[in-house]
Length: 421
Image (cartoon, rainbow, N blue to C red; front, side):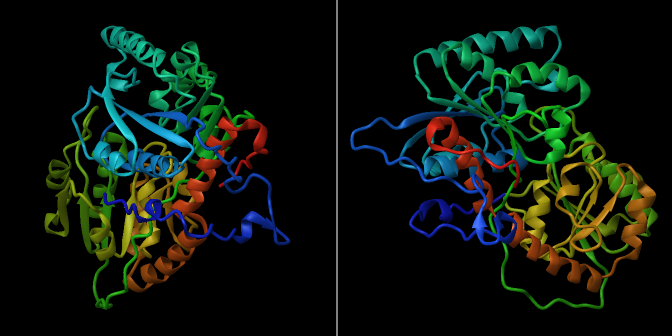
C-alpha cells in the first residue's frame, strides 16, 4: 500500500478545525485534540521513544504504525527508534519508517504468535524476552510504545528495566484465551489505545481509566472522478491477507450463489507468518463462472483497484479489529459491504455508506450482492466520502495518538484525554 508522507514533511500547516462532534456550543471539549506541547528549552534532551512492532509488511496494523511514527518522528521534542522483529523476512515497512525520520533496528523480539505457542515456542519467547531486557538496559528510553497486542510481552520487560511510561496499542480483538494471557501483560502499560470500542470491549478493559478509543485514519487517496459506463454490472474488490478467518470462502460461495453478479477482483496474499488459504484453488473449486473473478495477488498500492471498483467487500468470518480497507474505500468514495465483525460496524452506516451481513452468512451476503446495481453503489459511495472527511482522516487519529504520548511524557501539563475518536 502507498502511504503519502507529505503531511509529515509540512509541519507549518495550521491545525485542523475541530469537527462538530468535537465541540459543544462551539467550545472544544478538553483533551480532544493534541494539547500545547511544553516548549523545549535550548540544549535540553529530547525524550527517547521506542516503538516495538510485530511485523515488517504493509497491511493494516503496519500502516497504522506508519501514521504513529510519522506523528512522533515529526516532533522536535522526540527521538524515535523502532524495533522490528528479526524472525520475519525484511519487508517494506522498515524503509518507510526510516523515510519518516525514525531509527529502525531489527532484533529478536518476544512477539506472541499463535503458531509458536508450543513448548519450544515458549522457550524461544522467554529467550527473546531476556535479550530484549539486555538491549533495553543500556538505552534509557523514556517511553516504550507496543504497537500491537502481540508485542505486549515487551511491556513488563520494559517496566522491569526501569521504563516508566509504556503505551499499548490494541489493534486486534481478544478471545477468551487471549484475555487470560494478555491482560496480565497489559497491566504493565500506563496507557492503552484501542482502535475500536469493539476491540476495547473484547479486551475486558472498557472500564479501565488508562484506556482510550482512537479510531484509525488513512491518507486521502481520492482523485478526480472519471466517466464510467452506468449500464453495466458492478465491480467489487476484496483486499486482505489470505488468512483462513478473512472470509474468502464465504465470499466466493455467496458470489456463486448470487449468480456471479459482476466482476470480483481479489488482492492480497498469504501471510508471512501463520496459516493461509489458497485463494486461486478456492475460486476453481467454488465459482461456476471463474471468469468473473480475477485473482491479482499482492500489490504495492491498492488505490487504483479501489478506484476502479464500485464497492469493497470485507467478509471476515471472525472478529475484525477495525478493517482499514474500509476507510481506504471511503476516502475514494466507495461504499463497503462488510460482515458484522466488530470494528466495521463502527464505521459502516447500514444502507447509507454500505451494507452489513452476519458473519459466515452466505445467504445474507448473496442477497446483498443480488440487490445492488451501479447507481445504488454510487449513491452510497458519495455518503462514504462524506463520512471519511468528517471522521476518519489521519490528522484526527494522529492528534489523539500525540495526545496520549504527550500525556505520558508530560503528565503535569496534560488534562484527561476524552475516550472517543
